[in-house]
Length: 463
Image 1 (cartoon, rainbow, N blue to C red):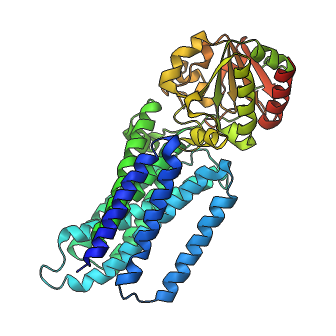
Image 2 (cartoon, helix red, strand yellow):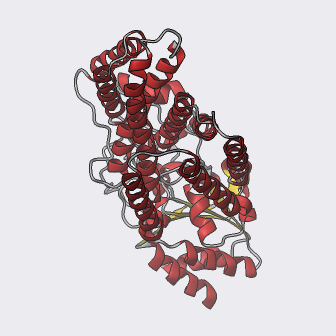
Image 3 (cartoon, helix red, strand yellow):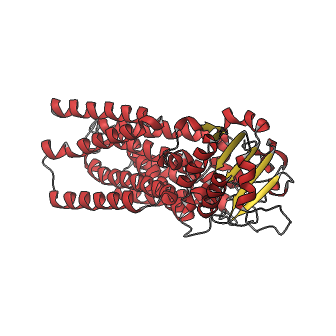
């Protein structure tokens, strides 16, 4: 029986995880919430060393040391632009680890199944679930990482017969899951894991464009549910609670993001089977546009009463968030009302722009969500779009059949003037042209965002 002190310690860790999740719900408390969660995780990992007679202790310590070194390296060296793929990779590692632990536990459970009542069917079903979903999460996260890291094309990867193969894999997974419960064997678990890896690949390969952040959130929920099921199998309360929290919050976030995209979760999950989740050509347009230099744009901004800034992934790539904050501070000092318009799926992961701007110490009060700020655009003198494209593309409202059609966007097209800061005329992540670029009210400022913002900042100061 688990000692009372261990049960109380695990209960305290579970409470800390709940407090951590609550803290992560707001930028002002996110840091302390993260520290509380990390501390609870360290305690939960350390506790078994004090009450269990562990085998292969040296190997366990070596594994922990390697994982710790990898985590510290990632935290210190990975740039903000690479944060989404790091999150995807870490999430996949969690799912894969849960699947491997479940396979080992299946090996331990098999002899007990010969004793009547020693193992109930639900425990075996939870084991099969952990193996399958953990493998799906691992494979899917690896593909997501490869897409974001540009190790493979970010465009949808489809091939003839994909729906048939996906359906057959799903049926095979169900059959193998049933066999795991009725006649458990290690080889069945291994095949189930392999089928899970295939399903993960087939689920994520056809995904492209703005669906990627939603898939990251979805796979995060998968990993959480896997860990929760693994906690049940291992009779570990802290794993059960932590996994349930991650699974529930990830599922809720996925639903919120799907709503923000104007699509159902079912469409995101299974749209690829009927050719959905597509991208455009990704080719740059040769149509004429109106461009200007920093001095001309500075005049627009310097004499505007109302400015809205729309940040996007290009801001993160250029690492220009600090310069942008300085520009906004100068405009506010001149009497201009300035806000940042935050689209739910701007960037490459949920909350990417919030994290990026928080790193630059932008006051949270200046970050306004899409639903709250969309009515303000019609009263705005200038919208400054920095590294964003798809989230302000009117095609989402006007072009049926476009990859982003139906997605709620920021109504930048309703403003008096729009300034786009872009490196080139290449389309955004969805690969389609943005008609707003060719609007007479739109001015383009070409160049690296950090360099252009620096020049723009100096020009505004000189007014």
